[in-house]
Length: 372
Image (tube, rainbow, N blue to C red):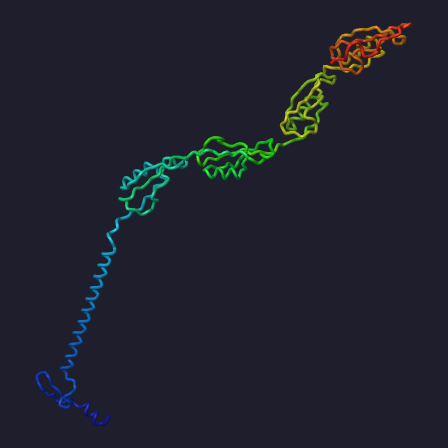
């Protein structure tokens, strides 16, 4: 830029030339440039356009809000009714639950349901469940009152093991007892199996515990030998070993109360608690001793010393042996035979004869058969 140009720009503007009303121009500018009036017209137009844009925008927003409101109104449907939560009633008495529901305007029915014995007369269930949101005016509640346990038939448990029995009972609401009893069984196949149970052939309330009896193997012991012992001693030994004792008596030359025999035999294995029969001497028999060579008086004394108290009969028997004269040469019963304490005894007494008959009577065996 030249010095002249800078001077011209810093110089004050020339006087404006007015050509017509409202129009003027500088004498230093060409007539074709934009005038001040034109510039003012442009500012007014811009303001009108801004207002027009604002109005159109507001109109659009209004239309959008109107359309949204209409859509919500048309598709939302009618206003939803008020909902209320079902009240908790479980555990209350039925009368208390009735009072609560009636005072709060609920519709309801009361029915009976199976329950434990402790819950009889109380609410055990409500339908719909407590807490469910429902329209009180349209919903009728069902209140279930505990009526006690139901009764079910107890199944046949014979021959079942405990695991099988537990499953059978659980399926119908019963429980197998833990403290079962045991009993000895003759049949080996029933060892560990149920042979008896509670409420057999009957019914029981659900939840009832059924106790059972289980078969076990028979316990056996060897029978001790008690022969030749006194009855009291033998009985004590057997009872200490777990046996029962039965007594039978028999005539014998053994001392009274001496055990002669036992059944079952000694050493045999039998069930504990079995009965052992003892055959006991009653002391009513004696063994005939040897009386040969004794006088009648000596023979009688020997018998009495044994406990004999019977009578003696004499029978003379010829003998050619002088040493046997008036001596016992035989008896009936004979030596070694059993006799009763009161049995009569015949003594054969020798009678010396220097010329005896050809045939002599027997010297033993006697005229009477042995006693017993």
